[in-house]
Length: 258
Image 1 (cartoon, rainbow, N blue to C red):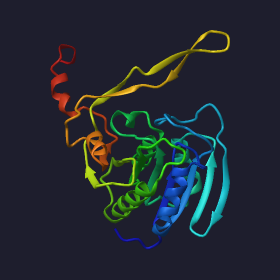
Image 2: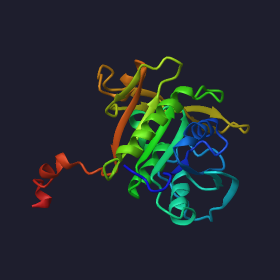
Image 3: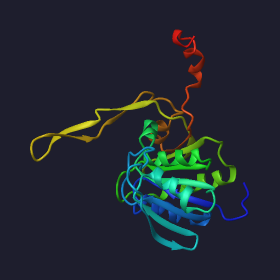
Image 4: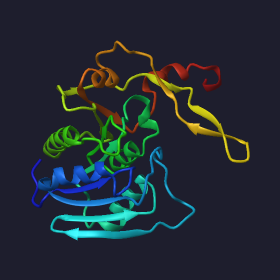
């Protein structure tokens, strides 16, 4: 794909504009084009595709440099993308990058993640979009490999584009030794034992979200969890059309639809 101007790259996340992951990503992609960052002013993990509808949203300029403009937003990751497209940018971005997230967004996490919610929103607008996550929740996590492979995939996406309605979910394993890239399927599984019971200062029950991931296909070498467990960067193409096309013919046979 050729560009008459420098590629315009919109960057957001769900960990907040000051998070280590997004700032390492910005440093790593500075040479790829003109970068506009619009990210939440604090942590918005688990927001999925949530939008703000009952409160006003505020947008604040953090800094402006050559080919880099950074805003903080009081809304969700999807709010950030919508504001960028509708109010801030003078032209449609050539690429949207969400991340680098602190923690994995593999398998079923795509339905909860604000990082992937932002990538889906870009996808809805016809922007080639990538969510990038590192399987490390540590505040001092080493993002070297995530930046390296995130940039490689970003460059190839700028070059080749993505099909309409498709975005990429990229997860990078923790550690310095990464074997390479692997195109994968989304692992089938679910979260169990999701809450930890505790008591507040008055003795009333409160619940902390926790959980254990149950992998229903641990031996599937095509799945993203297998790839991550074996040291590969997992790249899963996702689509915004959730229609169960394989079931359409069958459901039409039900008596109520005849």
